[in-house]
Length: 484
Image 1 (cartoon, one colour):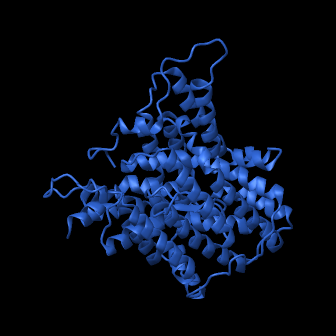
Image 2 (tube, helix red, strand yellow; image 1 turned 30 degrees about the horizontal axis):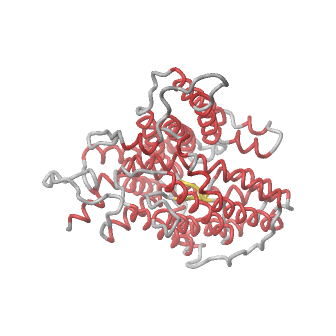
C-alpha cells in the first residue's frame, strides 16, 4: 500500500515499523476507495440521528401528515450531503476545505415551527417556511465577509469555552439516547436499554485499548454494528420499515411552493446569525484538531458555504445547515483528518437521501445503541474544549469568571428547558431553548466586556488578547502522546 494511503487514513497512529515523519498534509491526503467508504460511513452513522430528528421535529411541530415526514427526512439527508461537499471540497470563495460535516440545525426548530404555524400550519405553512429559509441563507452568504472581522473576538478563551459547552450540553442528548430515546416510554432507562448502550460503549473502549491502526479508527462503527446485532438477536430492533420504504424517492424542488414574508425571513435570519456565531468556534476547533490555521478568510468561506447550503436546502424542501459537533468529536477520537473522507460521507448522505430503503436500514438502529457511541463522542468534544482552554491564561480572575459564568448560564436550558416557555417572543424563546446558543452569546459578550471595552479616561491594557489563528499556531496541543 502506498505511503499516501497510509498517511491519509491512520494519520498520527503510525505503524511501529515506519517511524518516518509524514510528508503530506493529512487534511489533503486521499485514502484508498474502501477506506473512504468505511470511514465516511462511520461519520454518517455519527451524524444520522440528528439529521433525521430535526425534520421530524419541524413536521410534528407544524402538523404535517405522516406521509410528508419521510419526504422531509430524505430531503434533509440529500441537502446535508450537498452542504458537506460544499464545506469539505469547496469551490472558488466558498467552503473552508476542512473535514467538517454539515447537518440540519435543531437550533432553528422553534423559529421554523412558529413561522409555519403563523402562516396557517401544516402544508399551508410550508411555502412561508421554505421562503424564509432560502432568503435567510442568501442573506448570510452576502454578509459572511463581515464575520471575518470578528475573528479577533474569538481567542482560545472564548472558543475553548464554547466547544466545552457544546460537549457538555450534548451529553444530555447522549443520556437520552442511552435510555432509549423517549423519556416518556415505559421501558426508558430499563436494564435492557442500558445493556445495549453498554455493549456499544464497551466494544469501543476495548478496541481502543487492544488495537491500533485501522481497527482502532473504526471503533465507533464496529461498536454500533455489534450493538445493533445484539439488539436484533434480543428482538429489540424493528426492521419493518425497511420493507415499506421505496428504493428511489425524491420530491421535486419547491414541492410545497414558496412564499416570502418579511417577518418570517427576519425570524429565521436571526437564528442564522446565532448559528453563525456558534459555528465560528467549531471552525477553530476543527482547525486546531487537524493542525490547520483558520483565519478571517477561512471563516468567510465557511459561512458562505453555510449560507449557500441553507438556500439550496430551502429550494429542496429542507432546512438551515450548520456544523455537526459529533463529527468533530469523531475526528478527534480517530485522528483521521482527511477532508476527502468527509467528502465521501457527503456522497453517502446524498445516496441515503435518494434511496429511502437504505436510510431505513440505518434508522432501524436502536437509540440506546447509538447512545453508547454518542456518550463517548460528545464527551470527547468537551475534552477538545478543555485542551483549547489550556492555552488561555486562567490565572487571570476575569478569564476564570468568563468561563464559569458562560458554562453556568449555558447549562440552564439543559437543566430546565421550561425557562424558554416563559419568554415573551420567539427570538428570546430560541435563545433560552439552547444551552449552546446561550453559553456562546454569554462567552462572546463577557470577552468584549472584560477585554475590549475600555472606560473613558482609562489607558489601554498593556496586553491585548491574541488573535486566535496566531495563538493557535504558537502552541501544539494535539500530540501523538495525547490520550484519545
